[in-house]
Image (cartoon, rainbow, N blue to C red; front, top):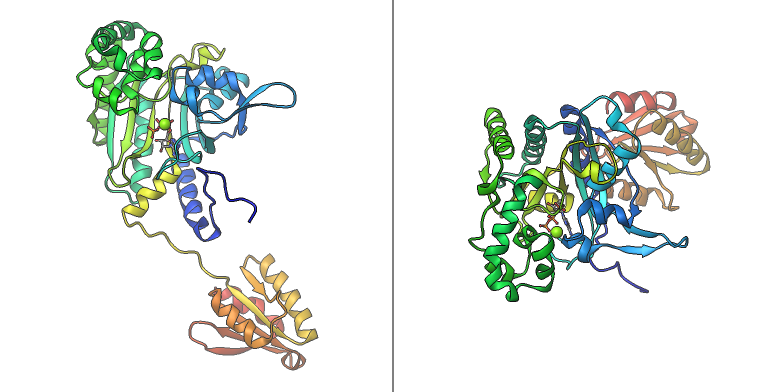
Amino acid sequence: MLTGAPKGTKDMMPDQAYKWHYIEKAFEDICRRYGFTEIRTPEFEHTELFKRGVGDTTDIVQKEMYTFEDYGGRSITLRPEGTSPVVRAYTEHKLYAGVQPSKFYYNISCFRYEKPQSGRLRAFHQFGIETFGTLDMAADAEIISLAHDFIEEMGITDVELRINSVGCPQCRGRHREALREFLKPRYNELCDTCKARYEKNPMRILDCKSPVCQEIVKGAPLMLDYLCDDCREAFEELKENLDAMGIEYTVDPGIVRGLDYYTKTAFEFVTTKIGAQGTVCGGGRYDHLVEEIGGPSTPGVGFGLGKERLLLTMESCGVELPQPQGPDVFIVTMGREAKAAGARLLRELRQAGLAAETDIMGRNMKKQLKHANAIKAVKAVIIGDEELSKNSITVKDMETSEQISVPMDKVKEVLTVNR
Ligand code: ATP
Ligand code: MG
């Protein structure tokens, strides 16, 4: 074999496809119920979008992006996350000038150069939601509620919603100072990335994955204690909204989301069932991102939900999804004329909406029936030259082995009625 799949990628094999279809259909459906419509953006963007949109003190921008120069000399990056491209499209197409709020969902692949492990891939997939144009905490509560209901509808029982506020540029300044003060005595022990963050954006240090940095930030000043009146009120409103909807949560002052432009609300849905990479869904508010990308000041709030992690969690919760059925009909033929009649019938049945198959391997009749059995066909239609001349063919129920004789021109009727 020339080569295997690249590290950190996973083939979705056909015998797993039904699971992906199941979650995709379910996500589409819940988005419909919540009033979100789909948006699709390209797999790659200009690199500067992510530098600005995700923030250049983040892990994503500092070490995880798949960036290359195209033949036109442009710096291009494979999409590492869904929010910045949607913000770019929203701004570019001037959707801010239309009716607000704007509510979108997406179903995308993402690319990050990470250390692959269970639940952490280099090419992975996300569902996401973005709401633009409202500062009302009802919008934050709405998307949290959507994620909550979706996760619950997927049969996941062990998951915790954690919420926090990361404040706004006004109140973050004071917290940043307090944080620097706190970290100063141990500055030299910080990893190199965090040393740089110390100056630019020390809050990011709280999110560092290095065990040393994680130990150093224990007991660090909490953003929650530094919120300005506006942010504190917003956080109270968020909690009231969630309480009113009966959604349980815990306040976790340690949550700092991956993007630099998050403001106020930050949240995660975390499970203990799939090991260290337990964050199935993460999101928050980003009231300055549209402006940062060149649009008019427009608030936004959204989340990303990892499809691989969702499926892993469903599996560990013992969720069993309906297995795909075999074809409705397998047409078994013997002889030249029968084969031609079978081909005609096959097309008719498919056009009538049935899942129908026939032999394309040149097998004899016995082997055709064996194959029909192997692919779990519900019925077999058996056509032989002789039967054809009597204008009567056999319909066999593959489960009960019961056989009936049916005139050729009634076969379609019989099969569609009994489906
Ligand atoms: P983590 O803390 O696990 O690194 P993150 O903060 O980088 O997550 P986000 O950028 O918020 O994650 O992405 C939203 C969701 O996408 C995550 O909650 C997770 O379910 C999924 N996700 C993120 N990175 C990966 C990855 N490398 N492989 C698989 N799923 C991922
Ligand atoms: Mg990450």
